[in-house]
Length: 363
Image 1 (cartoon, rainbow, N blue to C red):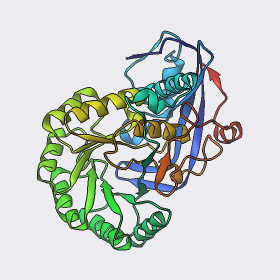
Image 2: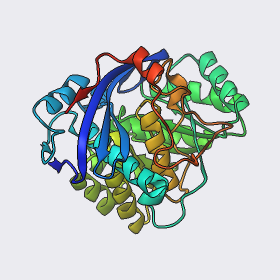
Image 3: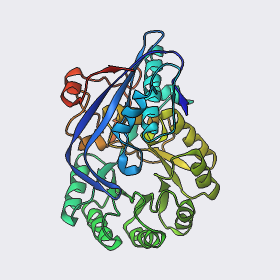
Image 4: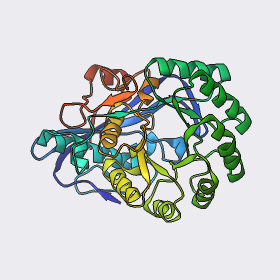
C-alpha cells in the first residue's frame, strides 16, 4: 500500500479518452483508444504538478473504472493509502509523477535531475514501433520510420506464427538494411516457440527480443536467455519486487524494460534500474501508449539512466488526440529533455476539453 505523500494540500482529477490514428495490434491485444485520468496536486509551497493514470487492461493492470473506484473510496485524500488493487500501479504512478513534477518546478530543475545522481542526459535515442501487419505494410512502415530519422525499429511479434513473423521481419530487414532491429513478443510464445524464434531471427541481426515467454514463467525466461544468440529483455515480468528478485537471481535477462505506469511511477522504476545495474543488467524505458504527460515522465526517467539501449518513447505518434497542444514525439529518432522545470510539458485547456470524459473533480 502506498500513502499519499505528505505536503500535498490539494488533489484533483479528470478523466479523458484519446483516439488512436489507427488500430494498433500486439500479442497482448489491440488498441483502439487510450483512457486514463490526469491527477493534479498542489503542495504546501503552492507548487503544482501533474501526473497520469492510464492502466492497460490487456496487461492485467485494471481499467479506468478501477482507477475511479480507488479514487471514490478515498485513495487520493490526504493521509490515505492506495491499496493493492486493479489499476493501483497506474494511480500510484500518477501521484508519484505529479509530486516529482511539483518538487522539480519548485526547485527550478528537471524531474530527471531529482531522480538521478549525476547530470541527466540532454537527449535520448528512441525507437519507432511497428505493429502487426502484412509483409508489405511492415516494410513500408519501416521505410517511413527510417525516412523520419529513426535508427532503431521495434516490431511487434507473436500475433501470427513464428514462420510468418520471420517473413515479416525479413522484409523489414531487407527494406531497412542499416537500422537496428528489435522485436517485442509481449509474452506470446511458449518456451519451444521462443527458442525457435531466437534461432530463426538471429540471421537477421536482431538487437534484442523483449519478453519472449509469459511474464510469470521466469524460469523459462532464464532458459531461453541461456541458449539465445540474441539478447533477451524482461518486460512484463518486471512487475513486482519478488519477480524482479527472481529475474536478477537467475540472470533471466540481459536487459529489463521499465514501464512507469505498470511499476507505480518513476521513483520505484529508478530503484529497479539501480538494482539491476548492480547485477550487471541494463535497463531502458518504454511508455504504454500514454498521453504526452506519461511520455514526458518516461523521458525524464530515461534521461536519468545510463544509455543501455534506445527507449520506447515514440508511441505518441500513434495518437490522434492528446491533452497537450503538441504531442511529445521524437525528432529524427531522438527526444530532447525539455529545458523548462518539472516534466517540461503543460496540459492545454482546449486540448483537454476536447478529450475529457468528465469535469475536474476534487479528491
